[in-house]
Image 1 (spheres, one colour):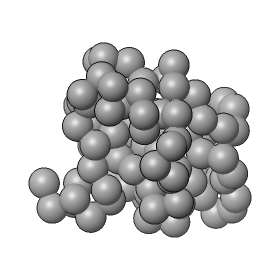
Image 2 (cartoon, helix red, strand yellow; image 1 turned 180 degrees about the vertical axis):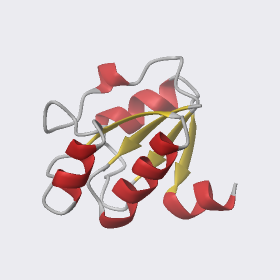
Image 3 (tube, one colour; image 1 turned 30 degrees about the horizontal axis):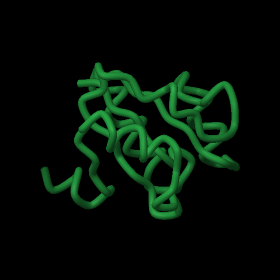
Image 4 (cartoon, helix red, strand yellow; image 1 turned 60 degrees about the horizontal axis):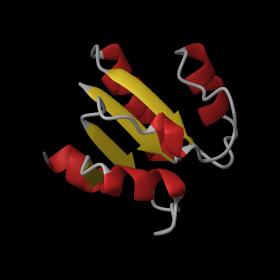
Length: 98
């Protein structure tokens, strides 16, 4: 599965991203700020975004799901692009439930 995290640097979000990566899923993500310990852990697993910020071009049709962090705003450009492409969008708890 290919999953994109909006706000990958969150305490819970980065751990889920790492777990999915270890499980063999393709993981990408973005955030407007990533700090330790999230920064170091994402870097260790090759999941640290190359740039800080929101990039709607990261949202491509081959993404199976977007996991939305708590501090992402309704006008987040990546979220809007995922909605435009009808990609499944989950909150962290919704994804865990599924």
